[in-house]
Picture (cartoon, rainbow, N blue to C red):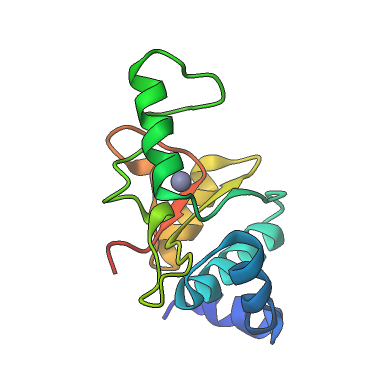
Length: 142
Ligand SMILES: [Zn+2]
């Protein structure tokens, strides 16, 4: 593990662990993903990137509707074509049928640095997707 990640974890202390419940209930994240998402949030904050979470879980039906709207030319508020709900990290459910998003969107003031930090923490960063999706992070590759 890189030294700065150890230092980050030491600096963050129990905050990420304590934040898991909030990240699960407020953003519908998978509990395992919530811990790394909380750590990412702390890292982005510590780096001065002024993180703001804009999206976690999305209802698969809503995601499908957003995708259809995009295809019909209604793209207001969307940066990229919404992913297939069967493949998107945002529409994952837990095995108990609860929201279990394995993706989170975080707006910052430096998308590239945020993406590099996310990658260092083992996440996929949308910034580097073929069709760039700045601010998107997921652990679907894990
Ligand atoms: Zn996203």
